[in-house]
Length: 215
Ligand SMILES: NC(=O)c1ccc[n+]([C@@H]2O[C@H](COP(=O)([O-])OP(=O)(O)OC[C@H]3O[C@@H](n4cnc5c(N)ncnc54)[C@H](OP(=O)(O)O)[C@@H]3O)[C@@H](O)[C@H]2O)c1
Image 1 (cartoon, rainbow, N blue to C red):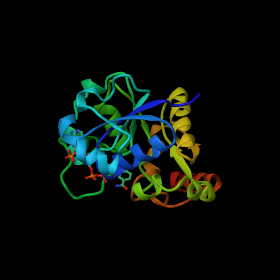
Image 2 (tube, rainbow, N blue to C red; image 1 turned 135 degrees about the vertical axis):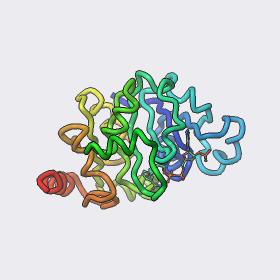
Image 3 (cartoon, rainbow, N blue to C red; image 1 turned 180 degrees about the vertical axis):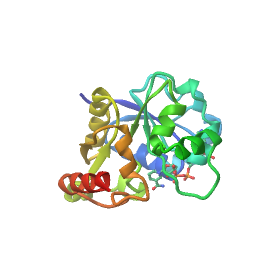
């Protein structure tokens, strides 16, 4: 299996880094931000020259998956219907102190991980947690640097089929995919854990996941 076409929702640091990395891996990229597609021309010319700008409502059309790279505090503005039926990679993190949407805060208060909260809200999509624990710099690093680092990136989903799709994407981007037990285990990838932003090979990543899960 090879991934041929992805959508990216969010055209900031993370979204454009993924767009560049995917394009250099031969993957077609559609990308959307808050602005209409025609207003993204100069932004994309500089930050993601090979990506096709589309409206946010069209991001899931004719792609194998959509990477969600919108700040969590802005998720109320994302139309859940437009993502119905798609595999949604939740690459978001709690990073700022801005208040979260009420549904998000409510889910966290009930003890859910951030990806479980997102899965509950985007209930018409299939949610996987991935690509959140790597910085935009490292995501878009030179392929030779990536090959040298042999960095592993984790995937947390409740679906083996979706894990396989995300694993393909991660491999094509130049990283080693590591499958976690389920979506709930994606909690260990959040900024408060010992995996976030750490350059780890597969063995070390698996070791840290099991330590985090045992805590
Ligand atoms: N930066 C990293 O290294 C990194 C790495 C992994 C994961 N992440 C996560 O990815 C998310 C984005 O981070 P970032 O650093 O890329 O932030 P950023 O540079 O501030 O970019 C955020 C982007 O989201 C877009 N956006 C906001 N609301 C939107 C909506 N309703 N629909 C479509 N697009 C929307 C913004 O569009 P406009 O510009 O049009 O307002 C902007 O392009 C965060 O959750 C972050 O934790 C970041």
